[in-house]
Length: 467
Image 1 (cartoon, rainbow, N blue to C red):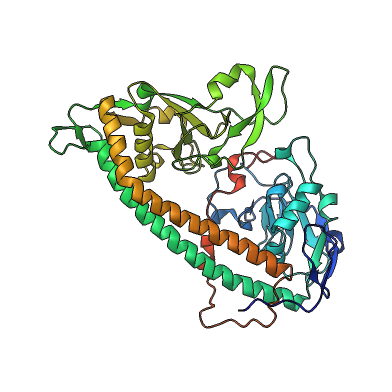
Image 2 (cartoon, helix red, strand yellow):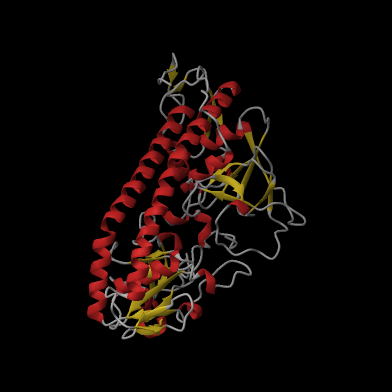
């Protein structure tokens, strides 16, 4: 469809928005919504997740890692069409329009429409997470620290909402869902490619860290079924014998005494395979006596304690100073083990599900320090470790470059999607005359690929303690 514009535009009330079609309405949220505080008596309703990635969805469909409460009685109830706002994370767009009746945290804001016909919930779901509105949430949120801002009801209800005629809202939603389906299929294809490339990389690493580079070397039984035979001259040691393992501390957001400071810290979502993601590092209070133990140093491995248990990366001073929260282990290799060689084994074990096999899954999986330090690792002579690491780097380089290109393409298509949504929901593109084609079919399973990554709820950092 060729991009077309509306015939006339006017300046909106909210400064972050571009000019909007002159026939669209714009009123404060309180004109359309009111805060409600309905509570569950039994806690038996469906539990919902409020995500910056996918809005309000059943938690059963999410890969979240928070503790589960014994009872959800007293949690807030929402129903289809309600706006649910994670008060603490609104500045990261953790909000959306509910499509299900269910339970959300007592700390969240739930806003019910005065007239359900005023807005399409799906249109609001698109609108409320564009960057212009996120900027408004940031400006209206209050708190003593940037990472602990809260968007309270009176502030949210004062935000202007732009309102196209309902028929246009429905057309906008239909158009964007079709584009989402095309984009999601593209992302899925790229993820499938990444999986294939990663499997090739795994085969290379698996063989190198269990058998070495010399095919003629004599082998011995490791005594571990899944590990099999290893070179006769290699040792097999538990992690506690080849590395120092430290689990981070519980999150503290307020100063406890004068002997400490707020410091940047890493949580499980910052620990991504190969290298850490430090674009959204927050701060917590750390006592002076804890700093030496919790500070990460170049060459340390960072290992996820929850979520994708055992996911690991190596710290290469991505930030001048950083510490760890209790969802992350700091693993410092001893002299007999090169950090790079240890990381290759973590990559192999993690991708093959070895860590999953040792965690307790009665509730939420946690790779405790007590379990992690008992995991066996191969220990070749240091010079041989160096040779193996160099060989792996050379062999995997083209695969890693291909993986990086695919990930960059996913990033670019997501940026395109964000811009397209913004342009359409703010009227920069007129889709009233758009007619779907024969290939414009939307299946819910297609749209699942638009998710991905971990939700911000997964870190155990919500103000009510459940997340």
